[in-house]
Image (tube, rainbow over all chains, first blue to last red):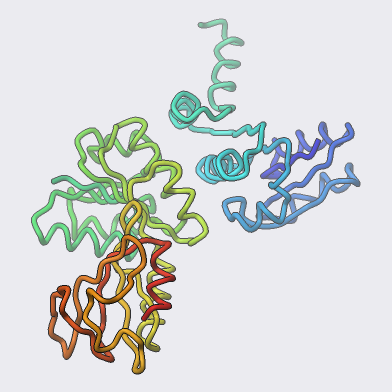
Length: 135
Length: 214
């Protein structure tokens, strides 16, 4: 599968390392090229692009046309939502997954606009409650 | 009418100032604390501190009763999400977004933003317009139509002919001509002179044909 990953922070790096073990073609975009180092050390077959994920030219350069999966995993909720909608609406990428820290924004874009979202804040809060034994 | 302006940079600041002077109710939202503190002295309770893509801030700004939301931030991802959140959560009747990167205009329209203002294209067109003739400047754009201004160069084929004899592009109307700083409303038998500045209603498709004709 051809997979575009936006963001090579902690989440992006972990996902890239997991997906790179299988026979996937990975392209990783991040503003900060320094963050590529950890992935570069473990994956030899990934392509790295340094740039803004909210710039259509950068996404085209990363091969968004013809990508099977698009993952928006940066720390910037709005940039993630924006690039995910470019992937979904302009380039018809089949599987688009967006990380959104703000639970309200995550719910709004899931319910009203059909984005597939993962809300780290909700997941962490749920885990904490579970470990505390409260509902 | 109540208008929320998200982003108090130069565009948002001047827009807010102008609208307040005309008597509109305005809430100006700024996420940068030091910028907010400077504006607080001038705008008082009309300026709200916070991130407008955050519903808490939108609510504080009065999004539940606003008529128009204008997103004027310097980056397109914030402007898009702010308008979308206002639509989804508060059913804001009208959202207007500043588009900084011209490539994003189509995306904004496709995703239901009611109106876009493409500052980059507008400024470059206006500068081009001042630099030479035959350059078409977009003054206003609506859903599918736009009002443009174009100078008539010497030797243009339309000079001296009555408007009704011109073959204009589809859905294009010549509205007025600015000649020696006077505005003349154009009718069927009006004629155009060299160096007239024409104001026309057209659309994206008609724009290129109109440029060629003139």
